[in-house]
Length: 333
Image 1: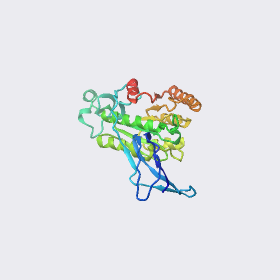
Image 2 (image 1 turned 30 degrees about the vertical axis):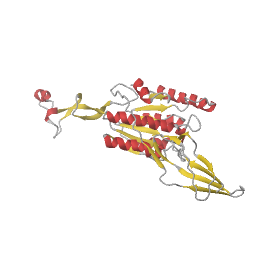
Image 3 (image 1 turned 90 degrees about the vertical axis):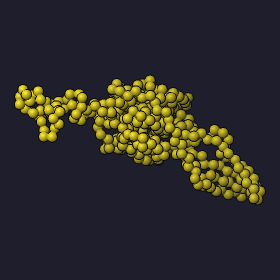
Image 4 (image 1 turned 180 degrees about the horizontal axis):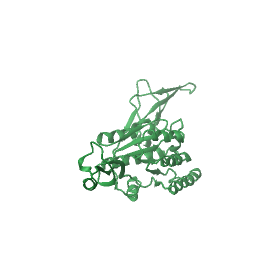
């Protein structure tokens, strides 16, 4: 083989940091050649595309192209990020903590008095009223509990904006933030779940415990909804909101992770807020590190969307990716 050219199918999510995935050589009968290159690992499951092999004859007149699938070409990167110092509490921050439940029962904060019903615990009977009026009444309290949290990751095609060619798509930064939030919230005992606004559906209801945490992190690493490649299909605002509303209780707190690259993302946040959900927005800025004129215009439009959401009363955390997310969280808590 006087002319052999090889191009490896490096996945979009892996950056070549040393060497090159391209190789050219000539092979005598019975001989072999090897080459190597280095890629930087990124969280997720990355599958190599088939390699392209091009051979030519000595005169260069005949050319043959072949795709070679080596098999076992999937690389899974699942690092465990450090849990951010999430100071959860009743204050209004971008992070949820305890919330007042709408459920009446045996709690610590007085809520109301009602007529006694058979089966009510004797400990909740208002005996003072019974002594005065002879009527049995039951005292209800407001239960205080940790809020259930749903991370809503904007994984629509519009959310795959990158600051430059070959850069990290904004969706992957949203996923990185979501991973960090999952670690911090589960460490605090907060039930947390995830869903994706994407034509490639992903849904894990809020839960707690080490096994549930692992399922969440595995979904971020390997679910098609969070792929490095954008989906072909599009998702409208109505469908995106409906996918959340039909599954989520009204007292579940929502963390909407979106780069806010288009007006539909802003509309989703406003519509979820209008449905009565406690909602906060975490938005990685995909335009922060670029000097491109088009992205400069996109940055202005994005800032206007942030301002509109804040003016509507929504809590918004604007994350410059040049700053560690954990530091941003601590600053906002």
